[in-house]
Length: 388
Ligand code: SF4
Image (cartoon, rainbow, N blue to C red; front, side, top):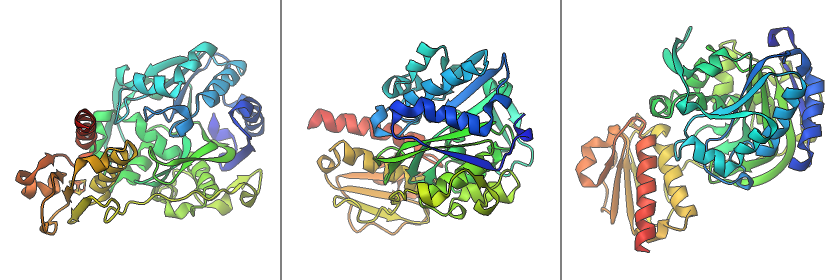
């Protein structure tokens, strides 16, 4: 149905706060013509960003007020059933995240809220898949009449920005994610579009996160909702609003070059000049060296599949005030790392590439080791809390 609509058109609605989100969504709906997308009796599935067990004001996830307003709107448009769901996050089960975010408020307005991790999945072949060849996806995503993607606007240490395409990574089961959480990540995002594209993407940019996103950044007011039928075009516009040239975002560039959507700003029609709504976000850093005074880093040929989760783990310990209590930490990752000058109180050998050092300390296996490192960080934080 979306194919009959103006796919390379992106609508930007100003919104001064989450108490004004309902009228802003209504304006966006009218401007896009959502009544042509959502038919009477449709089953609609909404994929928010619910990938972090953090309270809403941290702005790591799609705001519950925005989701509640969207559910109401979809019901008014005639949807028979609206389902909101996400998989388990790296750091916590989906239900715990939903509780922290406040997502269960969607039940009060008649939506089902489900953990995709508990739902039936179907193995699908990816036509022309370059990295993702076959994958298990939730049946509800494959079978729903309308699939709505509702990400948060935020920075991300792994991908610079986290927007619509990045949000779709949450359609992959937690246990299947590490194999794509490496250099080929952005190609994997583009491959996912070859299975089922979202019919509509709306970016929650009323408040965004800047700096060390996706979890440890800083909330910032941007005051926009950005919506459209082509996720690549929506991402390109959202990226420009956030002060990042869309061609810098690998997923946008790859998807555009494979004909999966429109990434070229000149070819995208918007209802407002981008210069009027632009709010450049502070970028995240992925540079580990000398970031923390008690952490020595020895990286060989390490890719971001290791570097990024190391950064996130250290940022998490720092934010919890635990990092200084850990003593001196030595981190080793990547192929052929430099030989450490000395070893600290805690030695972390991260990822399969560095396994020649596995006997020197805690070895975190995996390629990417993102899940194992997340689990280790949780245990290590608990130990530091106990002893401090
Ligand atoms: S183990 Fe090696 S290839 Fe795998 S994510 Fe780490 S650095 Fe990259």
